Length: 215
Ligand code: AP5
Image 1 (cartoon, rainbow, N blue to C red):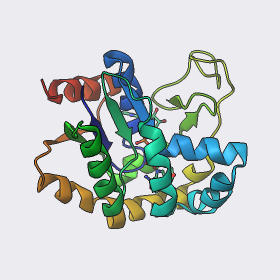
Image 2 (image 1 turned 120 degrees about the vertical axis):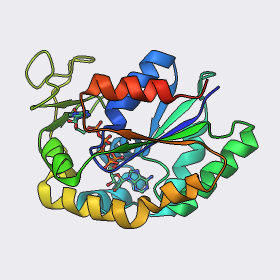
Image 3 (image 1 turned 180 degrees about the vertical axis):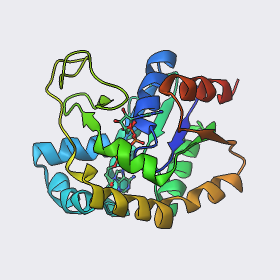
Image 4 (image 1 turned 60 degrees about the horizontal axis):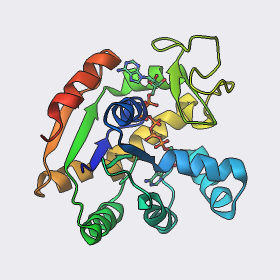
């Protein structure tokens, strides 16, 4: 059983690498961003509340996120979970520690994907996402086999509203101010933290990620 946090700024490749790793290791990828987008699409009260924050590039308040987390942990596979886009604040990190400790399944490692801001802005301008299964592609670097169609489920791909440049820049600032301090939080803990250069080919990043996994 292995529980990992995939950490990094918007567009660093958390979803891309998390999906590959989940397939490779039979782990479950748990993405708060995907859950929130599902709620927005379904128009649930949670989705209506979350949407204004997401469209503005701000974090959804902790009380909303903490409500999602316990549900997220239900039904995790025996191989463990990959947390993608969570935690993003100190209260979220402390809540995750508490829940995993209650389950007797401590965090195994934190993987930090590092990419320059300008590369991230360009990446996100080219991202296309599957609204059904969360798969991501890129018109510059990672095209689907059929134009604008998801390889995995055949759904037409979309350009996320929060991938517009001014919103991306706000998300990068929010990451810097509110989320990046968690690296120091984990470095001060017993959980191993691995820094990975995320600005290389997807396959090379995956190779490093797999090499850094706890044995
Ligand atoms: P979320 O969906 O989590 O977005 P994010 O963290 O901003 O990350 P992204 O999904 O944009 O990027 P990624 O790192 O997964 O990169 P990807 O693999 O897609 O959150 C969205 C919003 O929801 C937040 O702004 C917030 O409002 C809210 N939210 C979510 N969780 C929350 C929480 N816990 N608390 C509060 N609010 C929360 O790759 C990006 C692109 O680059 C793709 O096109 C991909 O094909 C391409 N690419 C990937 N790797 C490479 C590579 N190595 N080289 C070239 N291109 C690459």
